[in-house]
Length: 505
Ligand code: ADP
Image (cartoon, rainbow, N blue to C red; front, side, top):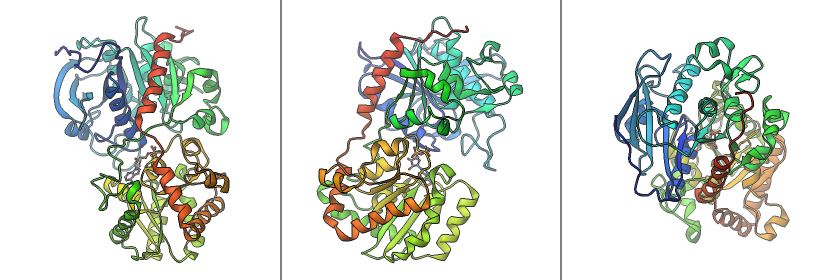
């Protein structure tokens, strides 16, 4: 067993933070949680805090982390084998990462949550319960690291049991739980709860019980000192029945303890002036060069290489939430404008994948799609598109519209969640004021999306000066991690100063 020393950067005022997550870029990524899980810890570290991450030891994560070695051999009651606690460093950073290894549990290739058939692993409740049990031991300094965090920051349902297990301890670190997407809750039947070997006290309406089932995310919400979500608008939306998934009452009950903090983006990775994934670098001084990325993208995706084209892009999971069906439904109107082209990247629902393939086969010069996950191409779409479509039915924060703003690509978004908080509509008033950054529509249907898109098409065609202004205003916005990290630090202090009283323990 190895005792861990304090790193030199942790000055006297620095906090010790254990950041628990089920994915982190570039170790493993399925969505925005991975981007946040690399960006926020690094920003906190740069502000002088001793932040350490803990993740399951998926094979890709072990392969990609730097200097991985075994720290401790840990027994978790109820789990037949030994668990190993590995330690490494995040690639390109000095943030330490603990990786939880349990033979046959996390060492499965591919998507962390689903098997090759696309279905959830049947033992996901067991897997993430085990992860949380071990992370609890680390948080309580019971594995011999001689390091005890002041606060544990847990993220999404996979880590929801961690604040719940810590809440049972008389002497524990403060806890903060972030909801990245309330649509994913980790809800399992009563029998599963019984099989997890969790303390029986947690089966309570004030704890994990949710309509006679067990809800991992409810543990994080009900039993953390503070709860955050990833935008102020989404924080309000989840307190209503439409987006609260039955948890709206509990979330309303959190009152001031529920805060929306906008995600930042990694300005080193997403910078059109230095992005190694794009053929032509540019910045606000050389925005005219951006069109070269469009030409390259047209070539790469097999679209007609028209200089006068207006290229619309989309990247994302092909699921109902993202409104991809709305994009497909407005295609007939879109394709009436003969200079408009569409490029899409994503994977997910087989029905949507099939509709996308049909569209590309039917209009090969105008519509191109790549089904799959491709980090490099996602950068080239951001750089090469003129507009980025995000008609999400709901969107907790959304990252791609932030990347678009950074790349001078005009976002067209539904006014929901983080999209509403980050994109300013190009109304005549906002254009005159110089605050407009994109096009925003109020209701997620194909008609409203088409209306917003046609406004963009008209502005691009008629008034190129305004178009340029729109792009430059977007590029001037600051969505770096630093301001979000300061906001989180204030909340950490609040949680440390005033832990919640847990009534039923
Ligand atoms: P969510 O977390 O709901 O999927 P976000 O907008 O918060 O949505 O984050 C999605 C992240 O995943 C972005 O960084 C986006 O570029 C990336 N992404 C999604 N699908 C793909 C894909 N098929 N290829 C490459 N990157 C993708």
